[in-house]
Image (tube, rainbow, N blue to C red; front, side):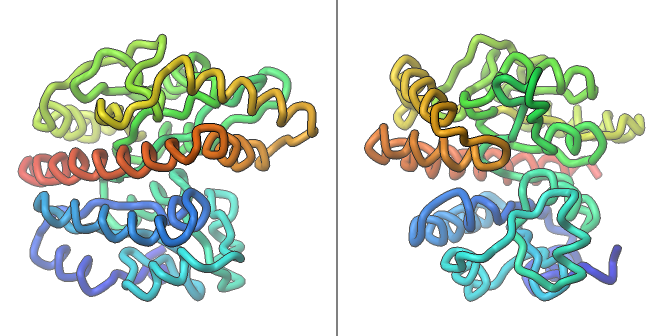
Length: 304
């Protein structure tokens, strides 16, 4: 796999100097937010990671290579391009073979990060089991990846457009620990709480770092979900957001929107129905995750 990987100068230097590195996905830039907020957020998140003692590595597919770390120009290109493919596990080989631009999802970022020797990854939220999955079988590849790839994912839980109960059940089946950072319950992305408890609570990053080290020392392969709630001042009202989601789901059903088109439709609808507040919340939670992720990477690196 090494022949397909290229490291940016910053990541290469970090590796040589033994500095901790934090992986970042590129789907959030190309498919998760509108321009110019996407590029601005990506740059700010990278800077937050540097300010907290680690080195950022935004991952994407460019010209037949897996780029571990993007230049300013590349970030801009991903933010502006309208023909960037969304790359999950199944898409990696084709996109690299055909030299197409690809933005990595949580699943693909985990694969690429592990291949580059990076164990800590910061994102917004993970995918999960979709509502009605018992008939549609719509389950995110993120969950499967978490079951087999040794990367810890710092996120604000999973979006409540998903079936959070079934998502937790699936993670349990795959042996993936869900660790709440200073919380006993699974955050639901825009909100700090859901009806579901986490497996373990950790009030400091050192506890999480030690848990990850022991897990992988024992060859218990697979990742971990580090659930970090959105900061209080940016959290959205639970009732409001759930009402908005119900209404968006109903509209998706009426318009026969299905498969991979459901999530972008729902997120667009949520943004529209919350007057853009959901975008503000999204940006705030990613930045918050970057702080925790960088601190965790430093603590984990100290145990090596």
